[in-house]
Image 1 (tube, rainbow, N blue to C red):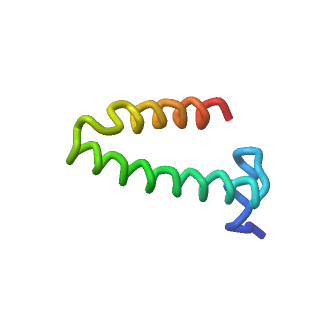
Image 2: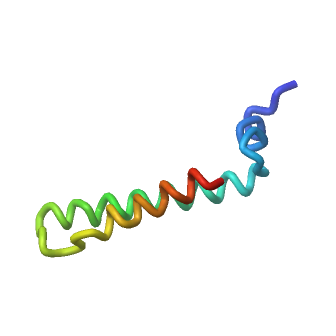
Length: 65
């Protein structure tokens, strides 16, 4: 019988808790970065490359897993 909570984590070589932590922390980071991007939209002199630098780093992290 399939376990819908562990099928995907197992497919990517993680336990449920490892996958939970990675996905949860990534989601929180993206929410924070979204707020910073909005601040940058209002005040272009603030956080000039902050979000794009972090997104590039996150991309590399995801693709190296």
